[in-house]
Length: 256
Ligand SMILES: NC(=O)c1ccc[n+]([C@@H]2O[C@H](COP(=O)([O-])OP(=O)(O)OC[C@H]3O[C@@H](n4cnc5c(N)ncnc54)[C@H](OP(=O)(O)O)[C@@H]3O)[C@@H](O)[C@H]2O)c1
Image (cartoon, rainbow, N blue to C red; front, side):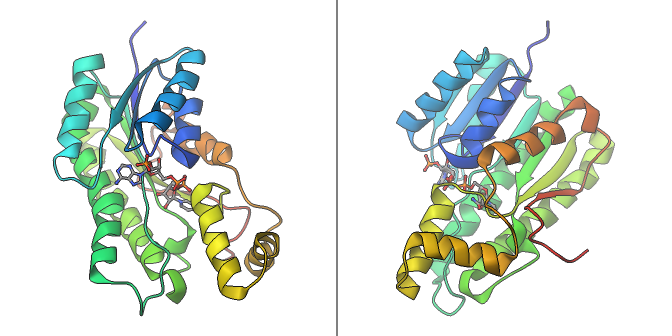
């Protein structure tokens, strides 16, 4: 049987970890990328228990040389790439009037340029396998807020970047889409709610309920639910779906 290989960035925790574990059902090898080696090894154990091989690559994707390292190490270990899932992101949720240039640059360097460089490095190999790419955006791309301006702006950039790669992918036979989650209960979301709770001098439970009421949704999503959307987006059944944004948000975005 031919080996199939998927790279997942941000695989040390949250949506990236859940996605890597889910993809172990569909791919024979997973390449797990983030900075925290201990947490990546935990993901790797779960992936191996599910029957796939796992390669851990711990590095900072904001570094310009990181993308080439990921692709070289993947090809040395497995010889091919069938799917690239760009999930790593750490855009600070700061007010538009408080965020410094350095904080904007840091958010862009990782989430936008890290994903862009990795996609470019992997492109020729993906062409050879008729592979697939997913970028992770987020609801804030279409609902930007002053209190977390960079989250909206950078996710909008991600969707535009994915669309541009998708256009080239039509001729190169590489399928490219974005997945846009709503509010997913991960460490990142907990930290955001904690910050909101402190600012309003309420407890975190109240902050959670307040968020759900304001967003007019019934519950937060899970990382595993987003992992299922990614798995579909890169499955053979979805190969003709390209250049689109797949949203899973419990109905938070009310506009068409
Ligand atoms: N949670 C939500 O509600 C939500 C909603 C919409 C969109 N999203 C998007 O979904 C993605 C994942 O979110 P999450 O909630 O799962 O976040 P998370 O729990 O904070 O995980 C972020 C991941 O990115 C990795 N990462 C951070 N900085 C990195 C760097 N410099 N180099 C390499 N890897 C780095 C982290 O690993 P290390 O720390 O080990 O490097 C971690 O694996 C993000 O792009 C986020 O914007 C999340």
